[in-house]
Every structure is written in C-alpha cells, then in structure tokens.
Length: 607
Image 1 (cartoon, rainbow, N blue to C red):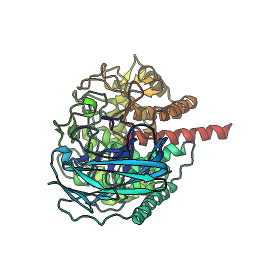
Image 2: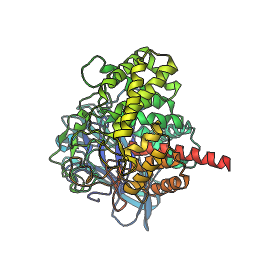
Image 3: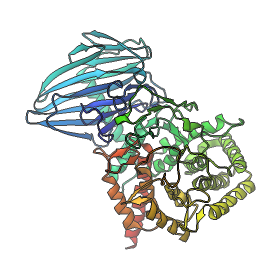
Image 4: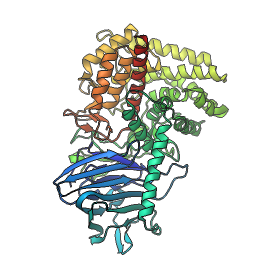
C-alpha cells in the first residue's frame, strides 16, 4: 500500500449524501459519514498511520493496474492484470437521491476474477471522528462490528475475517468466473446490524445504480464535441451535491495541499454561494433544470433566513443543510498529506466579507424564467431587500473571491460582481413586474461601472487589475465578459485578455494571481488553477480566438486524471494539487465546453 498515493490516483464514488475516494490500487483512503462535512471514518490520505483505510486488492504488488468507470455512471472498476490472473474490484455506494437524510451509508465492494486465479487481500481499519475516537471490535461468523461512541460500522460479506487488534483482515482466492462481495455500513451508535448481503441482492443493486446514472445522464441535452468529458463532469457535480437539500459541496475532501508541504490546506466540504450560483447556468445549459431549481430554493432560503437581521444578508459558505457555523480547527494529530500541515477541519473563511457573492447569487437567480418563477412574491421581497442593502454596502474593501488572509482591499472583481447583482436585479424586476427601487439600483449599477473603469484600470497594463491602484493581474476577471460587464470583443477587454496572457498564462495553464506581487497572508506558492484555465478558454472563445481556445481546452484535458477528474490545481510537474475532485473545476469545464462548442458551430455554419 502506497503511503501517500498521488492525489489524482483516485476515483470518486458516492450516494448523493456523502462520498469516498478509491485509489487505483484498491484502497479507500477517504470517507466521511453520514454527510460530506461529517468527521472522517477513513482518512489515511491525510495521515497514513492514524487516519484509517479499507483495502481490497490482489495480493502482492507485481502487475498492472487500471481504473475506469462503468460508462456514464459512478460505478468504479479497478482492474489488476498479472501473468497469474486478471482481477477486478467493483466499488459503488447505493444512491439515496430522495429529500430525506439517511443515517446509514454503505460502501459496496465486489471482487471477482476474470482470468486465471487471483488471491485478494482485505484490511478494514476504521478510525472514527478524524481518528480521535477509539472503537471496540466484535467479530462473529456474520461479520465484524466496530463500536465507537460516535457511530457503529458493520463489515459483512463473503470474505472470511480474522481479528487484527481492533480491526480485521482477510484473504480469499477466486478463480475465473468467481466473485465475492463485502459491504461496509455506517450506522448510528449501537444500531442493529443490517441484513447480511446476498449475491443476488448485490447483483440487482449494482444494476440499479448503473440504470440510475445512465438514465440521469440521458436527460442531458448536450450533444457537442466533448460529450464524454462533459458527462463525467456532470456526474461529478451530482456526486458532490447533497440530495436532501440540493446544495453542492466544493469538493469531496479536506486538507489536501495546494503546495506539497505547505500550509494552504483547506476544508472544502461546504456549499459556497459563488460555486453553487454559477452552477445554475451550467446545469441549465445541459438540461438539468431540477438540480438548478433545487439550488435556487436553497439559496432563497438562505436569503430569507437572514431577513431582518443586522448582519450581512449572505455568508460566503454554509454547511449542506444551511447551517452557517463552520468553526475552523486544526487536527494536530494528523501529519497531513506528505507532511502538508496543518490539516484544517471547518473553514474560518465563512466569516469573511466577500461582496462578489451577491453578483453570483443574482446571476444564478436570474437564469431563465423556468427557474425565476420559483422565487415567488416572498422570495422576491428577500431578494429586493438584499439589493437595497447592497446599494448602501457595495463600496467597501473586502477579502475577495480568493479568500485571502492578508487584509481587505478594494478588489475589482468584487465590484464587477456587485454591478452584476444590480444589473440582474433590474432585469428580474422588469421581467416579472416586481416592486423594486429601480432608480436606486440603476444609480448604484452605473456608479460601480464608472468607478471600476477609473480606479480598477491600469494604464500601464492596459487592463482591469486585481485591486484599485495596483498593476496586479487577477484571473477572476475572466468572468467579466460572461456576466456582461464588458463586451467580450471590446478594446478594453481584449487588452485585458492580452495582459493576462503575458502575466498569468503558462502554456495555456492559468494562475489566479502572483502572490509575490500581491501578498495574500500565507506562506508558500501554488500551482495553476484549473478553474481559471477553463474560464480562460471561455473568454478566448467569446473573444473570437477560437483556435487558441480549442487548443487550450484540448490540452487541458490531458491534465485530467485517468477517469476524467480534476483537483483544484495543476502543479509544476503536471501533478494535481488541492482538494479532489473540485466541483468548481468541473463546473467551469462545462461552461467552457458549451461556450466553445456553440462558437465553433456558428463558425462552421458560416463557412
């Protein structure tokens, strides 16, 4: 077992309430339950010795490993090929797509031999509550029970088990055509064991999962040039969405580093208003209106929950059920991925002021009549009150989109998105004939545009810049033409894009900004941001630079991992860095693919 496999060396499985990572060598080294943001049960990816893991793999290390998804599903297949035999491990979690949160979550693992004879090893070592809660093993002929103060887990199936301290291990030799299943079930403390799994039941269940995912993907209306990548991104976004509330998390993991050995190790298992709002347009472009509508409802509930309070109308992030409390703590007993310390649970950035979120929220709320009508009168009153508040509050320094910890600034992107908030609010008021202080909103919108073009413009760079009075470039502004702040082919935008090419782009990969030129309060450096690279493709396509856009998009696909997943960043050697997989990256991939595909279609129709 590799002590710390590459971040990209994993596939993702999930049940629409939580998720797990499976390495290409058959190790589940990340799993939190009962929700995405719950304490971990398996976390050897963050601490090999104390995090816990679940291994199911052929004996020995000699051989070739391959990993793939069953087509258009979240059912993961890990294959092992050697001179003695070919084995497979099928991993999945039974989907729970309904509105009710479940207190039971199952990891199902099926080992089978395709050719020859393969001996499979099993080791199950749960470590509850981030490895802080001990457990007691009860081993019976029916399986193993791991009793902890916070939860009980059961391991049942076809493998003979033996005690290994308070954990279990086992081994089983399978010949061609033979299979064996094992099921790990997370339950509340002292819950009775689930019924033992049967071969027929597992077979039926895996095909139900396959049917669920393939039928869902089939409802997509995308038929463009990059169908496989777009569908994989869509499945990943759905895997990262908490079904009971409709809220997506930013990533399945916490604590994975943006720089190996560095301190930029954050918890991304929460719902960012920014990410979710931008996902609405991508989901609608693909035809997934139900998913878009559910997030709109969730966002509307957050606005109404704060109505009448003295604080900000929105936080930048919440727990998946809307809980605003995300207290950050350092897990001092975890060594971190390859020594990347500290490992943080929770996220103190929830308390930051980021004014751009109101622009993204309105951008999401304004997407299409079929979504907008769901807001209703009371929803509109909350939205209008938010814009009235923003009219008095937009002209303030904030921490900005990148959640810097080096002090507040007048970030240009924050102002651009405040402009977006008023622009979309005015359009919604007109479209739905809703009461609004349109004169006030119009004055604020126009004042922001004038201010940005005067104070956010660098004569030296001939570009919009990161903050007022600086010459620092920032890739967040790649969204400016998408939201309509500048025309994508206007002279001001084209020179801004040229400046980004000079400063932020490295062989088509895009950095967020230069931390040395604009200190963010943190030590170390980071890789290129995959989100920003896809936003760059989107901006190139809108600017008419289609050859460059297509080449950059095709090249970026070579940085995906073996099953089409992206982490947050690409490191200096092409390795994936940061939490994995990252929803915002897959969202921006969909945005880039649809924009570029439509632009190419228009070009070809004119030819």
